[in-house]
Structures are given as C-alpha cells and as structure tokens.
Length: 304
Ligand code: NAD
Image (cartoon, rainbow, N blue to C red; front, side):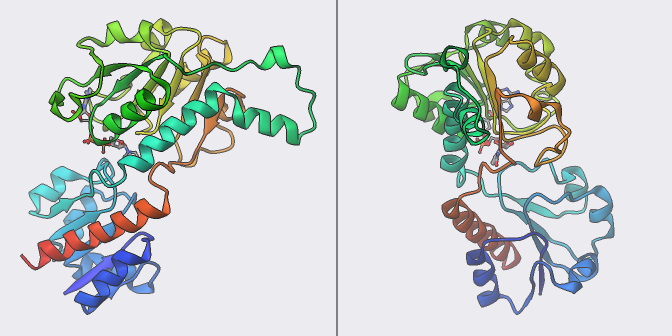
C-alpha cells in the first residue's frame, strides 16, 4: 500500500501513518511526482486537485484533506472515479473563531495600525485615531456551522454582543442556548450589523454573498471580517468602501487572489485593513489534532 503526503503536515499524523503503513512517501520526497502512478491514498491540505489529477490517478482510493473547505478538490471527478474524499470538520473551530474575534478587536481598536505608526516614529494625534467599542454591538454571523457558532459564542460571552444569525440550512439546536435573532433575508441584515463575520463555504450560492450592493447598505461604522474564503466578498467594492470611509475597517484572513495576498493588493495599502495569510487554523493545537485526524481517516478508509 502506498500513501503520499503531498503537503507539509504536523508530525503527529505522519508518525501515525508510519507506524501502520510501510509505504509512506513523505512531503518533499523526490518520488512525490509519481503519486498518480501508484498512490492508494494521499494526504493534502490546500493543494489543488484537478479533474486531470483524478483522470491520471491509477490506483487512488482516498484523498484525506486536513481542514474543512474542500473547494480545492474537483469533487465531481473524484466521485466519478469512485475516490473517497474526507476532511476534518470541527477540529479547527476554536482556532478559526478565535482569529475572527482577534481580528475584530485588532480592527476596532486599530492595534496593528498603532503598532506600525509607533515603530515608524509617527506622531499620533489622538482624536484622529479613535477606535470603536464592541460591548453590546450587533454582530451578523453568516453561516452557523462549527466555526460560526463558536465565533458567535465568543462575541456574546466576551462583549455581550447582540447576535444576528443567517444560515438557512443549519438546525438551530446546536445554538439554541445562545440568545440570537435568526435572520431570514440578507437584505435585513446589512443595515443592522456593526460587525459582519463570514463562516460559510465558497459555493455558487455564496460567491460574492457580500457584494457591492450589500456593502453599500452597511453602516459607515461597520467592520467586515472574513476568515472563510476569498470570493465570498467583492474585494474591489470592499476596498473602495474602506478607502472612502464608507466602512470602519476589515479583518481578512481569506483573499480572492493569493494567500498570502501579494504586496500589490490595494487592500494592503489601507490602514483600516488587518491582514493575515489564511492562518485561521494555524495553531499548534489544531495542527496536531487535525494532522492526526486526517491520517486516522486515511488508514480507516484503506483498511475498509
Ligand atoms: P460547517 O460546514 O460546520 O459550517 C458551514 C455553515 O455554512 C453550515 O451551517 C451551512 O448550513 C452554512 N451555509 C452553507 N451555505 C450557506 C448559505 N448560502 N448561506 C448561509 N449559510 C450557509 O463549516 P465550518 O467548519 O464552520 O467552516 C466554515 C468555513 O470556514 C469553511 O467552509 C472554510 O471555508 C472556512 N475555513 C477557514 C479556515 C481558515 O484557516 N481561515 C479554516 C477552516 C475553515
């Protein structure tokens, strides 16, 4: 049996594989380019798997993806070839929700901006750099799955925020204890939010769920947080609104082009944007847990 590890993984999952399967080709091994020939299983994180990859794979039975979003995998092609695709939902919820929360505070209180200005030796004329408080504010959460619910709890518990939850598909049981208003129509949501945080997968339905019109209807004091996927927010419209002071700020971990975003990205020139490089799940704890979970699933499927 051959297993190829095609992305860099935290060691716990690799150790687990090596103890159970003799033929593990580690990440970075020069033989990695041959995986189409003889891989029974592959371990991946963010790498793209195209329809062509599945067409060329001769023996592949399972793809184990560490992480939640599977938009990097040509699922129709996998299905057509009978390849099982598994991911590791739920494991990274604390890490990603905590980043959403952290970005919100960083934007609201201008923390990275102050840090940059202090280091550059700039004079800080206080009235020009006022922040905004979170206590009691309205937080719109789009997507009440594992991460969205965890984030909602943080905003509620830490700041007593009012929660406006939009998710037409999620049963409310998982968050019945959390005081919230369920929003049925997004048009109702935009003008109400002080913070908008996104926790949906990227699908045809969610692409540009925050479009130019939505941004135009939000308060000038609102903050947009995207720790989900680039493509959920119209970045050009967001950039214009932030530049013209039609939004307070944005915290972005997910980008339309390039993760991390390239230095020429106009959003990076704005002081009211806090940027992270798709680091939502990037904690020691989550990487160890999800590496192991991805390896366990792979072995489980291959052992039938
Ligand atoms: P999840 O499947 O538990 O939750 C997703 C929720 O989105 C579900 O409740 C679903 O009903 C809802 N949803 C789907 N389509 C919707 C729509 N059109 N409108 C409103 N709600 C809709 O997933 P999760 O674990 O909470 O992860 C959410 C997303 O976070 C992932 O899809 C991924 O894109 C992103 N993510 C980012 C990072 C990072 O490092 N920044 C890490 C993990 C996950």
